[in-house]
Image (cartoon, rainbow, N blue to C red):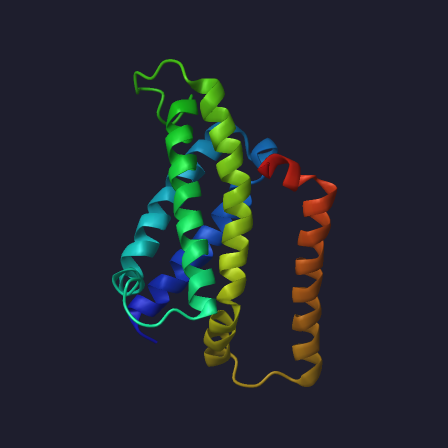
Length: 178
């Protein structure tokens, strides 16, 4: 496997882990949340540098329904990342406390919450769209799984997706999004 492909995988896994950690604000604390947010922004930039070929081709070729959906998701994620970063800088009390920013915190908090929850949902959908690609890469490492192993992995995947739907409803995430 090429170095660039391995780097892409590492960055994507890092972004997924950071996203999950960022959503556990109460557990990790404010300072860690800020530093992880800065790290997420860095990985986001690296992710787009590594995938710049996609960005260059955005206005080229035929747009299928899948490609339209994928492009809308990417634009949505970009907007939520901009919102998260903008508001995160204003709200920062630890990592960026040296910046002379005063005021605007109430609006920034609203933007941050909207961006965080919409971003989480949009990134989850983005990850889901690329699931077959990830499974294809995994097959390079694991040549053949026994039938029981395949069903176990499918069950785990279904459980995680089901729990995601349950948590979305139970925690009223839709309310935060609106």
